[in-house]
Image (cartoon, rainbow, N blue to C red):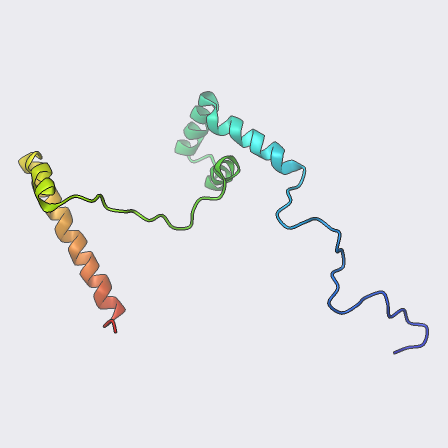
Length: 128
């Protein structure tokens, strides 16, 4: 290197601030933001005003997302929906309690879901 150059200033593989802020540590404003979000999300009067602004198109959707995120944490990336476990006789009895119009709507919805599932399998190609 150069004569008189301080080689001990930066060392390879050593972080610049080993005693710095730990990963996951929060700043001083995070607890305040959580408290504010808690007040906003749970106060019925504030909720009414926010929803009124949202319906009028004057409220940024990102703002509501941030409030809910501070209040309840990060939402899950994917939610698994588990169908209820019923045998065919029990399911037939439940469908039998529906009105004729509701049974027709259920049949239409079932056909659409089957068609969507088949089209998504066709788009994926053959499975090995």
